[in-house]
Amino acid sequence: MTPGRRAGPGRARGGAAGAGPSSRSEGTGPKRQAKARSLAPAIEEYLEHLKVERRLRPNSLLAYTGDLEVFVAHAEAAGIEALDGVTPALLLRFAVGLSRAGLSPRSQARRLTAVRGLFRFLREEGRLDIDPAQALRLPKLPKRLPELLSRGEVEALLAAPGQDSPLALRDTALLELLYATGCRISEALDLTLDRLYLDQAIVRLTGKGDKQRLVPLGSPAIAALQAWLTSGRPELVRGAVRWVFVNHRGGRLSRQGFFLKLREYALAIGVTRPISPHKLRHSFATHLLEGGADLRAVQALLGHADIGTTEIYTHVTRDHLRERHKRHHPRA
Image (cartoon, rainbow, N blue to C red; front, side):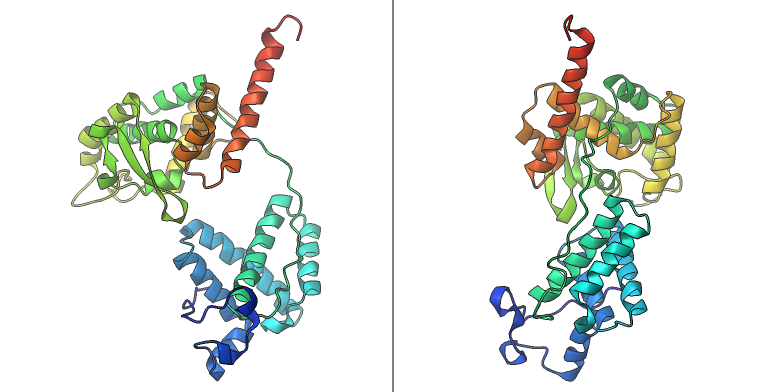
């Protein structure tokens, strides 16, 4: 499904969303009316909105596309190809079908979130008078605490790549950056040379929605990055390449490429449970809070828009304290 062209002016909001054609500055022609009635082009327009205005990353956009394609298949199987054929009953059957298909509550919630977002967007744009997904409820998700690495496991993981090759220097620098800043793997791989200020011990990260934040670097991360940039990266790069982290051919390092290396390093240090770069982000936040860091400061470092997202780590530290208490207190 290829995102279509974003709608122009004439965006209706609130009570004006259901206004007739005479109240809109455009969209009165037959072609526009046909597009408004058709389900597939409306989805393309929504995807373009997510890409251009919401600035969703390619992976997130791909997930939305796949989830909406599942919904389109459900609607077409019911003989529905137009927006006005989508009813609350159809959406309820879609939700029930996801549950009966054996999808996890989290996967069900993700697909239903995509569908709810689509119809909320169409209602706000004036394509629909009523949002048929307004009453659609998401399944209750079990509270899942972040999985993390112990301090000892982090230290072992950071040392695992070694220093004996350009790729080893790269992986050491990338691991140090992930743990030093708590950044997402996408933020690290998107990092360009002009956003790295080693002389000031600062890195400029670009997070969700293209929001930027400055995050300090510790001396181990600075040393690892300097070693990579001076002794490793020049061996791989030919010409002007912006990315800090490159692959063995000198191109931008991919997520998949680093995931494979991370699993290799984890097994080498005896960590057999599933591991991902995001666990270093979880470990960064939890270890900061365990050390007495302020929750608001951790929120800013992680780039969370809502402090409620950061608060999940306080549950992890409480569990950690309970475990310590149980292990060491004589009357626990």
